Image 1 (cartoon, rainbow, N blue to C red):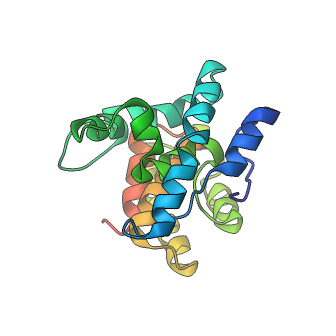
Image 2 (spheres, helix red, strand yellow):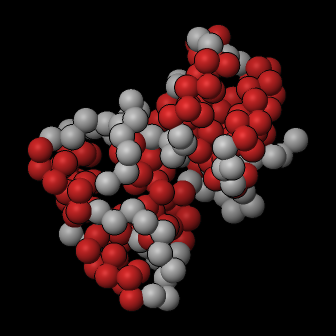
Length: 186
């Protein structure tokens, strides 16, 4: 089970049991281990997502990360959910897809960054209520330095700092700019 941070949501006992059964590891899709992980995730993930949705346990910004096109950049327009749907993967099928696992991890635990990186970024940011788009350049550069210092892949840094900024309450455009800069885009 992934390491818990203060950004992790609270689970009921049955949800905790389901979370413990989920294989979040990245597998080479051509391997037997990947097939075994996929089959093992078929039952707990939809049940967990359903339970969390019923009690509105997933923070709004994390749901928007999945459902809102404004929370995604790229050549193809649309939300992450819409991109899955374009490929014919909807509902429970999307939730058990290997490509959804990073989003599920974010739903449950927040950004996948070391605790020291999160603490340093929060300290640099200060009170997030006062962070604006004009501050994003400075905070994004700091995030990039943290990513480099801690050996975080630039493409991972982009998305994970975006998620962290969202969880800290920053406006989506400010969070997105911080993520872009953290990932190396000038």
